[in-house]
Image 1: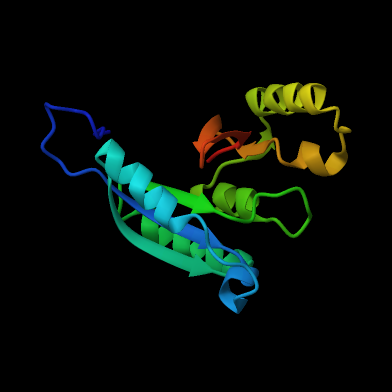
Image 2 (image 1 turned 60 degrees about the vertical axis):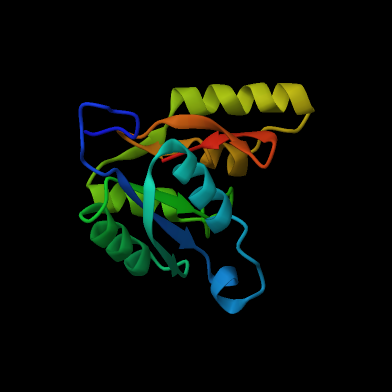
Amino acid sequence: MPTANSSASKEVVTAALLVIGGKILSGRTKDQNIGYVAEYLTGLGIDLKEVRVVGDEETAIVDALNALRHRYTYVFTAGGIGPTHGDITADCVAKAFGVSIDTNPRALAILHEWVKTTGAEMSAARLRMTRIPKGRISSSTRYRGRLASGSGM
């Protein structure tokens, strides 16, 4: 697969961002990801070509992922990966790619470290956020100057 820094490859590395959330669509929540992701990807030499916003509906998310992943080198998601039962992004990514979803050991280790550092309580809701589709990785991402640990797809 081509990379943004690959000098041997003349292929343009492209990306799409899928923003997920009914609150974004209703206006109750203002998006804070699009500009940040666009600037970050541009800095890496990745050409963000499309942004889509869909509600918290399985069919809409799966359909959008399937359409975008066939058009672009990378697809990033924002939203819908929190600890509640209504956060279905991870399950939809697994469904779109036809893979299973399970607790990721690296994501679990990050969560345990966060709980230890912050003194927060471990809960089933927090453990839910360590579920990652097979073949995806957990990540630590620098976000607006802070280190945000979590699951990335």
